[in-house]
Structures are given as structure tokens and as C-alpha cells.
Length: 151
Ligand code: F42
Image (tube, rainbow, N blue to C red; front, top):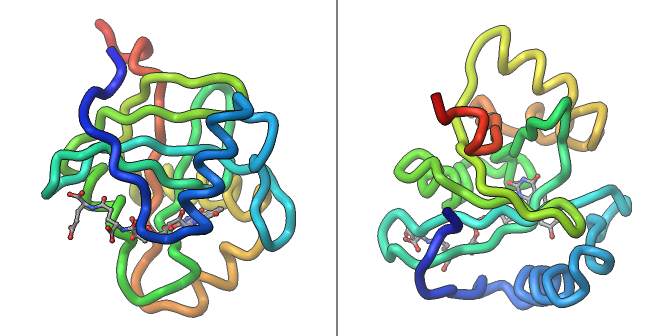
């Protein structure tokens, strides 16, 4: 079942514009990062405090029907706010181009994180610099279609 609630667009104009263009074009426009033009997905989460629907453009890291989202925030010292949304409510939606799916997010550790981190850096090489820039270990969530977990 899709997430329901009031959508609160990002306070950042460029993020708001990218999400709007992505959704309006069915994922055919606004679907690359502004820096190096690599593919972007849109993560929809529920605000941990407000309960409102939040939409965040993130880099596309995909493997065999699963995705990873990387809470890098450009190597900033703090986790992005959406990290706390996913910890509080793992039910999310992910739009990858024209395809939107209900998914479940789970933070991964150790070998599983290492495996996905390697895929993440292959998909978007600046992640390696972001990790060097910060003392925190950049969180990695794996997103699986909600249907993977039905039994
Ligand atoms: N950020 C990444 O961390 N990783 C990426 O791979 C990535 C790729 C990317 C590609 C394209 C692009 O345009 C942006 C990209 N970004 C990437 C940046 C990303 O889109 C976010 O802007 C960034 O990660 C910061 O996320 P944030 O959740 O901290 O966003 C801020 C600006 C924001 O919108 N904050 C809202 C606000 O009002 O300040 C809050 C949103 C929210 O969820 N609030 C919660 C609530 O309950 O509603 C909790 C509020 C609280 O205080 O705890």
C-alpha cells in the first residue's frame, strides 16, 4: 500500500524543482544529478516528527531488483534528516524513472554494507570523497520491494 499523508515539499528550491519535474515527466526529465549527470531516484518517506510525506532525490544504486540509498549528504558531519525518517518508518516508496514501488528500507552493516558501498561508489564515484570528508560512517540502507517480505 502506498504511503499516504500530506506532502510537504522540500524547503530547498532546487530539490523541490527536481522532484516536481521528475514526477510531472514520469521520470523522463530531471532524472540525473546536477553535478555529473548520473541517474537519480526519488525516495518518499514519512517525516519522523511531522508525519508528513517527504521526497528526496538520491543517486540510483541498484542490483537485481534491490536498491541502496546512501545517507552521504555530500560528506557533511551530520546525517541527512531523511536518515531518521527511515529509521523510524522503514516503509518507503522509490521512483526509478517511470517505475514507482513500495519498498522496505533496512540499514546494513559489516560485509553487507561493504558490498553495497562498492556498488554505490561504482554508480557514483564522488561517494568515496564524501566518506573521506567525514568522521561518521556514511549510512547505507538497502531497499527491497515490499512484496519480497510478505511471507
Ligand atoms: N543526498 C544524499 O544524502 N545522498 C545522495 O545520494 C544524494 C543524491 C542527490 C542527487 C540529486 C540531488 O538533487 C540531491 C541529492 N542529495 C543526496 C541531496 C538530498 O536530496 C537531500 O537534499 C540531502 O540528503 C539532505 O536531506 P535532508 O532530509 O536533511 O533535507 C533537508 C534539506 C530537508 O528537506 N529538510 C526538511 C526541512 O524542512 O528542513 C525536513 C524534512 C524532514 O523529513 N523532516 C522530518 C519530519 O518529521 O517531517 C523531521 C524533522 C526533524 O527536525 O527531525
